[in-house]
Image (tube, rainbow, N blue to C red; front, side, top):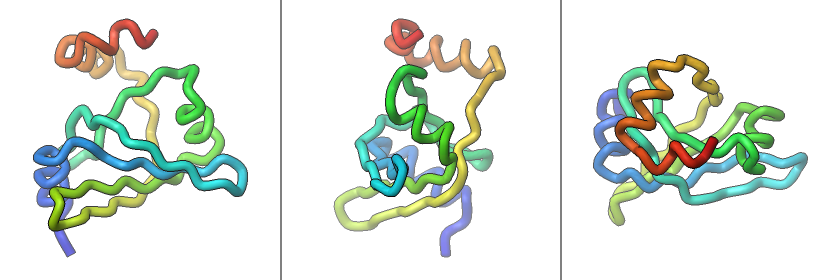
Length: 102
């Protein structure tokens, strides 16, 4: 089993993730561009009006999958919504396109 640091390094090298959520009893999977990962977690941004956010508010359990074409990394856990304005400002600074997300 890999350490969280090794998982974060792999995810940062392969930033397209497949995120699995649930909507009622129906699984939902979509490709997401990860912002970054470190020892504290895997960071993404999403528009609050999207079904993805509603699904995660209803059930914060999810699973991520990353691949480099040879190796697959699967990570399961619970989503924590970020409300810290400093982290949000950093996201907008590093990823200016998210400013239009609202």
